[in-house]
Image 1 (cartoon, helix red, strand yellow):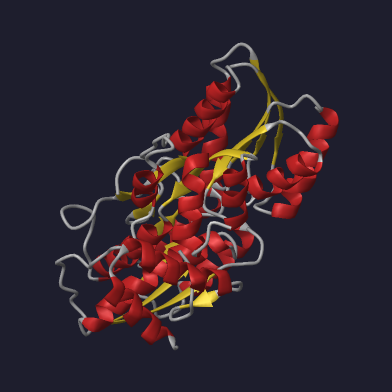
Image 2 (cartoon, rainbow, N blue to C red):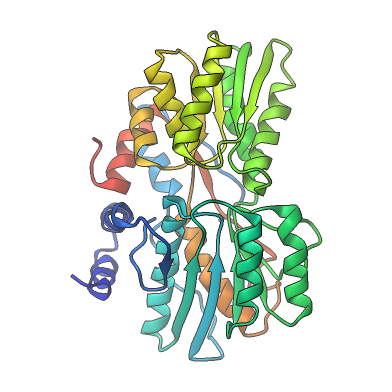
Length: 376
């Protein structure tokens, strides 16, 4: 079955559960940088968090990821657009965002509007690499340039430079530019700090508001990772019987997160908890905790299949799942409006807020079934 047939099948089903299973099958197959038309896998207001009870996991799960989208009533001014999107690093999280983009792309095509786009990133997060890509894109024939900011301080001035040169620039995904940046709009998670607070509050409550904890941040300078870590630090500081004994950067690497957790446990065998600020480090931390037979409680981010299995088994206590699909779908819609010369206002806001839902062990099996077709 080719991609067009897959999309047609997905559209005809129209039930969220089955749509999710079909789309996530593509996620499992995706493992390298992509362009428009490739198979990808897998977020609208402030973060919604809900600690599900064993009798209500389905309701929580269905609200976490919305696969049922239709284009709004806006009529594009052109019948062809070409976009450039770059993000932090090649990773399944951004593959999930891309699926939403592809659905919007297909729906536009059904209306007679052809959208092509580059969707590229380095193998490892690098502000230097991202700057190079953006400056090169500015020389290309793109209607809009979009970026998931790798480093707020380093990249925001580059975006200002592009806008001053006449480029139409937006940010998307998980990390916006610095306040005051000239980028036109942002679509994605606008509440990373609050997500860090929510996850850490859940951990503190679980630990009875006492104990030693560590923070695995992610990529140095990445706004989403840094903001979640700051939310965690500010929350811990409220409780006199809690202490942060280590803060480490794993660069969004499962293997590095594992190794850092092992080292933290060597120095702190009585560690009570770990706060994980990206999609990779809950997996690395859980592997280390299991390997070392530690009782440390893990809280973290997103929908990695292995992480969800650890959640189901009780190794991970809770995960903040972002609605990546909605992020991608809304990004493409906003890009079309920006390309047509529109500015934030009635058609789209300066910041499109997407959902994060905190899920717990009772939710894990249902989430695995919805996203991956099996609770195993």
